[in-house]
Length: 243
Length: 243
Image (cartoon, rainbow over all chains, first blue to last red; front, side, top):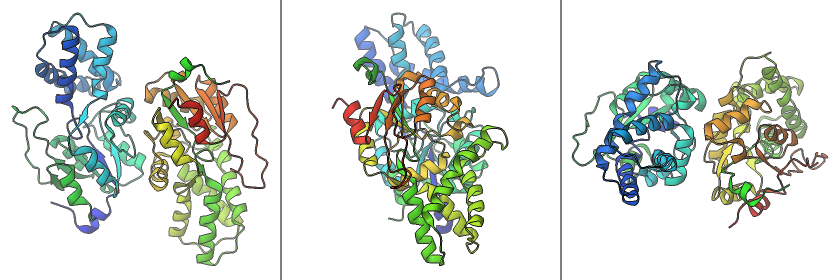
């Protein structure tokens, strides 16, 4: 599974899935929802709201992927889902400013405990780039808010395609001016890694068993094509860094 | 000239021209050329070589701008000029690996003395992004090499147009999801600032009298449309930062 020393030495850049892999979207959305609910006197099941919001993510992207919508950045897809959910959860009292602020919760997600320190370690040996479906401004704001030390913000927005479309992985290789085997995707999601592997990337699966909350039963199955499997970014740094 | 407190408070991102504004391309190219010349026994006027290489920059970009060449990233334009100059300067003994390494000197340019510390100060108050004709990989490698603390790498490559085409400034506003007046261009070159101003950007002229060497007479004229004029990045931080 893991690469030979020569193969690993050829890896120049680590690209990262962000939602779920680097940041804990669920706890962040719940926490901000609860604070907003308390301030506005709302009675909402925020864990269910967070799950439903995230649940709208893949279908919304698929509408872009299948040509039902023109290219639409993730902020706007999030807002379309938010507007639907506010109705479904009978939340009718939020101002437009409240809605805009809530929609930008995805710019303010909290990293997993190991993320920032792990990225600082990994940055000593590799170019670190996002490779996320989040739009560029979302990723820039998140990095600023959370202290994520990226060398480069790469986004599906730059390809005009959402992962797992191959164009996203090809865009990153082109912009980093690297061959696919010089790039590793780090992600908590099997299908993202499989799509990257298909484009010739190296792959590291980082398990995030709490992504969907303490009661979920996440898929932690390991595809033999994965080059590395790690419990967190410290573990990944231990495996990838020779110092 | 300088903005009102309310106008300045609206500025969210500082975008930077890089070659000449952040890094001292001329000294860097001369120094690496001299080292290569000593190692390979070449007798070359490296200051003249550096000036000729940089002199090929605008004409090469204009070939792209006028449709004579398809979109071509700056690394490749630099290489086309380099191959011509090696001939003109009668340098015939370099290996292909030497040429590739020399061409990447533009990835290893040294910042002006104030750049890194000034950027760290400015980063406390603003999103900092490159807005350069250098390709993405060049800018990523340069930042890594020189310790430039960018929040985001933006490049002409992402627009498929070179500055001063308006598409470059428009691309940055779109990707940062900001209105033009929320963005300031920081540059040492009047025409770059004038083009940004035309697109609605705020502007800061940073004087770099040594860009073209100690014997050049640089154009340091101040267009009244510039919002700020600064001697270096410390001076700019003094003017822009309230803390």
